[in-house]
Structures are given as structure tokens and as C-alpha cells.
Length: 239
Length: 239
DNA sequence: TCAAATTGGTCCCAAAGTGGTCCTTATTGC
DNA sequence: GCAATAAGGACCACTTTGGGACCAATTTGA
Image 1 (spheres, rainbow over the protein chains, first blue to last red):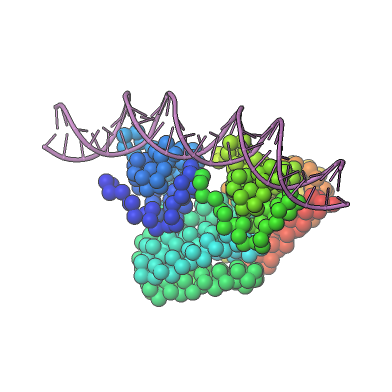
Image 2 (image 1 turned 30 degrees about the vertical axis):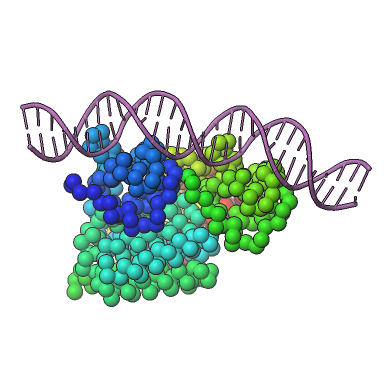
């Protein structure tokens, strides 16, 4: 694993300087799958150049990520995603036990109500961020990998807009499994251009419901969205 | 931390000078979500330029917002939205940030669907365990502490019966917060003998629905159960 | 095998940014 | 005109960021 995934950084919004901004940026990049389990992040000096910040600043940002267990560093070797043995192994072991169907079930349990809350609490900036992410997702209709990341980001933004830190934390946990599980293999089979187009349309409808503050509609739409994802999954699993 | 959200100010009407006008303006900006919890406001000097006012004037406006708890200032660092400076720092326990209402909200999101799955997948031993736990809870009608433990156990058994390891893990996470949070204080206020009796009856009804494999009914009952818990909470919070 | 290159770890200090305080002068409202 | 308010500046205390030098461990490559 010698090649860095420098491309991962360019997928998301433009980086901005500052410890807080950098750590938040990297955290999003990791949680949305731009870097996955065990990947090595670019060297600190290169990150500093990318963010146009001093290495000491990047270092402080990485300190935060390390403290929250998201990355681990090995002297002389690099900075790696996850891998602190405990906080991560538990997640990994869990991820291996979860079938894609169970994953969708969990999302089906959590997301409809979360979306309802998001309708009530979403702010202008929240909606603005969603619109940007939606545009990116729609532009990635032919790139399964990219679409999958933007898809994850969109749902994460909804959880964020719910203004419930516990639900957000719950959704992060679900998302972590999603990034790891056999889902990766399913992705290839499921995400045909037609399916991606459908998902994009559903996302757009959900966004509109959020924008128009229609809680009931948003909840119904996200449920239908996940049920379609579940059906696509079952169809791919046993055609 | 150089990226300000100057755009936030432009979403509202042209600002007017004066301490009262500025503080009212900023308050509105915060409450409408132009700046959200934990965000840093622009520096005082920049606000002064934006409002075409003297820094000392902006300062007095911010004094008001700080006094009303809407913002908090950190010397050398900035002015932040939110009451305490602590909420900004990483590493604080999630449980400390969750209000009892948010906790119930999260349970309201997760448990109804989980219960539905439990109806479909619960085994005889599962149901048997539930019955035992229910009996214990009903025998603890006068012991808030004991009832609370059996209550938690009952809901955990439902999550277990769903046969979805991810949902179970999610529920454990929620339960962890529940054990830790200010919930402990609320427990004393909320759990009157009458309320405990109500909860026991609801538990019993849920169990019956599970036993009779009535998924729709079970889902409705658990929802009503949690909504009652939420209402009891709100009532205790502001009688 | 061994030396060079790479990479995180540590320490230091300077520069810039930001709120805190105090003061004098100008403007406003009665 | 008088009092209250706002403007504007100077300086302080503290935080954050920038940037360099060097060290220690690892990786790479001849």
C-alpha cells in the first residue's frame, strides 16, 4: 500500500485553513469513504501543502482525529485510518457480521424519523450544503464509487440537520458498517446507471420536501427510498 | 480557523447601527440558523466594519448576547454560538451533551421499527425472557431504581429479539447514554407510582402484541409508549 | 547489508489574530 | 446646552498559526 489516495481530497469541497477546518474536513473525508479502513493518509508535509497550512497546524488537526480514535499514527511510517485496535476492531468485527440487508433494515429504522426531525430543524446552511452535495451526486451518475460517497454524504447531512447529536452518532455508527461491509461488493452489482438515476431523483425529491418543510412527505419519501434500496439489494442477491 | 461565514450576514436585511439594532440582528441571525451551535462569529473588528459601527458598539451588543447566554467568548480565540465553551472542545463525553428529550427522540426513531422486526424474529426463549423481566418490573412498582433497570432490560430484550446485530449495537449505544445522562436526575421526578403502573401496563401490552405476532400493533404500542415517556418528560420539565 | 530518503515526534520562537480594558473625542437626542 | 450614546484609537493578554531545526523510527533502494 504505497500509493497515496491524493485524489480523495479533491472530491469534496475546497479545503480551508485552520485546525478546526482541517480536522473537520479530514473527518468527513474518512466518514464518507474517501479514505477507508487501514488506508494511509498523505504525509503531514503533503497535507500541509494541500491545505496551504503549516505542518504544525496540520499536526494539531491530526491530534484531534487521533484523540477521537479516527486515525492512528506510526512513527516513521505514516498516519492510518482507524486501527487503534480496540475502538476499531469492535467496529470491524461487527461489520463482518452484518449482512447488507440488516444494514438497510437499520437505516430503515433510523432514517425516517431522523429525516422528520431534519425537516423541523434544518437551517439554511444545512439545505445549502445538501444542494451542493446533490449536484455532485447527480454529476457522478456514471461513477459508482463517487456516487456512493456523495450518497453517504447526503444522508449524513440529513442526520446532521436533525440537530440531535445522539442520532448523528448513531448514524455514524451505521455508516461505518456501510463503508466496511460486503456492501462494497454489492455496490458494483447494484449501482447501474439506471439505479443511480433513480436514487438521484429520490434524493432530489427528499431535498425538496425538506426545503418546503413538509415533514410527513419527507418521511414517506425517505422510507420509499430505503425500501427501494432494499428491494434492489434483494433482487441482486437472488435474481 | 480562518474561514468565516460572512455569507450568513447577507441573508438578512441591511443592518442598522446602534447597540440594540446590532444585538437584535445577530440574535436573529443565530436563531434563523445563519450561524449554528459551536460556530465562530466573525471577529469583533470585522463585525464593526460590516455594521459600519465602532468596535466598542459591537462589543456592547455582544455583551448583551453573552449575558443572555446566546454566545460565549474566549479570549484570544473568538466568539462562539452556544452557552459554554466546553461544547466546542472535542473529547467531551457524548452523554453529557444529550438532553433527555434528545434521548427520547432517538429512541422514538429506533425502537418502533426494531420492535416490528422483533415481532417477526422473536423466538420462544426471547419471549420467555421478556416475561420474566416484565414480572420483575411489575414487582418493582415502588422502587424507581429497580424499575428503571428492568425497564431498560425489557427494551434491550426487544432489540435483541430483532435479530439485527447492528440495531442491537445501536440500541446499546443509546442505552449507554441513558445510563449516564442527567436522566438519573429526571428519573426521580418522573417515576411516580402512577407513571410506573402506566409503563408496566404498556409493557405488558407490547409483550402481548409480540406474543401474538401482531407487528403493526406492536409498533403502534411502542410508539405510544415512548410518546407518553416524552410527554411525561416535558411535563416534568415545565409543569 | 547498509546508506539515503521518507515520515512522524518534539521543541522553539515569531507573527498574526482576537477579545479585554481604558481613554478621549464626536454625534445624537432631549 | 446637557447628558447619553457612539466612534475611534491605543494598548494589553491570550490564542492560534506559521515556519524552521533537529531527532527517531521506518521504509526504500542500490
